[in-house]
Image 1: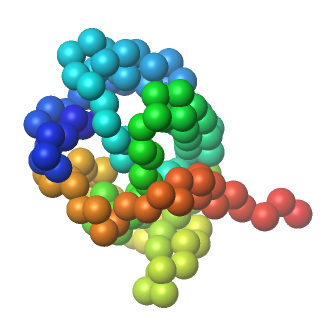
Image 2: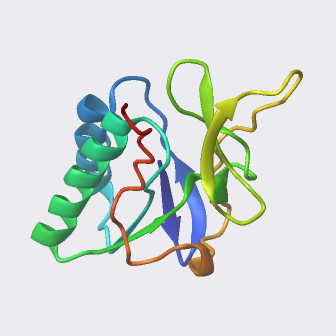
Length: 138
């Protein structure tokens, strides 16, 4: 998680654990030192449970505090690298922008999620619904 002031990254916060356990703690810690005026988050694809928990927490928090909520795709903050899906499969975004699932190619290198040094408002939207990308069950 990152703190931004005037659109620029001023602090990075990282904690290990389940989203449901650490997200409220991080937000509480931030509120003790800074006022939150907007929240920007990645709404998927990725872990179904983490996306769901994160979205519900952030959406509720923003409604209660009257804070604007914005979302972007995880591909926007990991250089369009595949994102862990289920088992040994990964989500990837093809040249048309469609999100599909596949196994990693041999010697394929995954890029880390990285907080932007500066918020690019063009990649964010007020359409914050989760992008679950659940596979078809047959």
